[in-house]
Image (cartoon, rainbow, N blue to C red; front, side, top):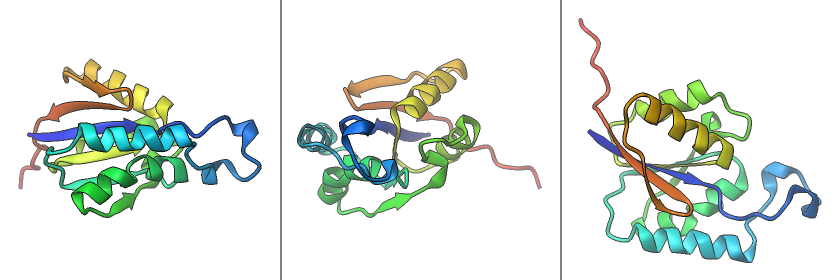
Length: 142
């Protein structure tokens, strides 16, 4: 079984307060505090990979965690702002690693709903993160 962590983006303020493209909207001071609290909450957790939306605020939400675990942040369009829930679910459930997936709040909530609908017990860890155990990916018959 693989453990996954679903992380929603930390506070980046409102869209109207940021003059640039939304995909480049950075975390606020409070958002950076949330990101550090997430890293503290997962201190000592075994993590193999960190995968984030290509949007800056999602990547920044896991920077302190990546630094604490000496891991790169991989980017994945399937976790983007307007990503398909089905595509994101296939990505999340297709891992056997202990993986952190950082994405947008609406996609995290949709993934939690779908995982619970499939019988997974998704537990909150803190205001930004939830965790669950996934069965190993099915092996195709040869």
